[in-house]
Image (tube, rainbow, N blue to C red; front, side, top):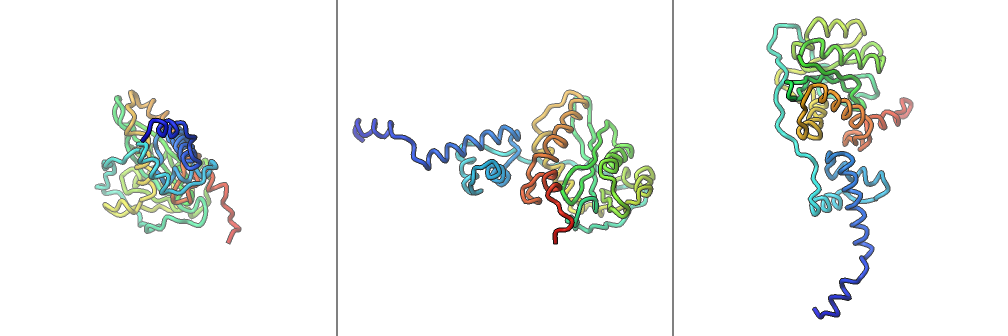
Length: 266
């Protein structure tokens, strides 16, 4: 290339296609920072389109790959539920049907753990299967029936469900306890439990826990249980329920999905 040709090339204005790519990369970087690296190309594409940057998932995946923009990767989960007890267990009512026709028809619940310098912080959640919204949750330093009862009581206070709601859970001793089952009975909720060693029977909550660990916990070093509790609140109430786009909801957040629900729609 001649010297004059090089200078002409260097002084040339970016083409419309180059400007478009630069604009998309800037938007991707801004969203990646805002969601703390929690979005891969599918959710990133949905967010870009919602913000007025029309694009395809293939384009977004290519740009993220070229510019080293990666979503947080999952790690292998550990087992926390001990179902080896002599307490009564319930049948699996949903039988892996996780798509109720409306809110407060079926909930799913389980427990996970959060490591801190003070020791484990256990987290129990209750998720509405219709919108995947976490409607109740609680934390404690011990994994007792009080932990799961507190989460269920929060869900009942917030949602005021009617009789017949199916409350599905793992089959750990906390969920088989008289404490928990008594609360279900007082509110007319139907007890349901996963089968032995069948994590897919409670797949939506397992998916929530996987997202929580991948998108938050694995990158944190909590000095205290209180610090972890505050972090759980920010993730569940500030991000997961109100902001995070869910593939099972057409890339809407749970709160937005519930706002668009019309029980009269055919």
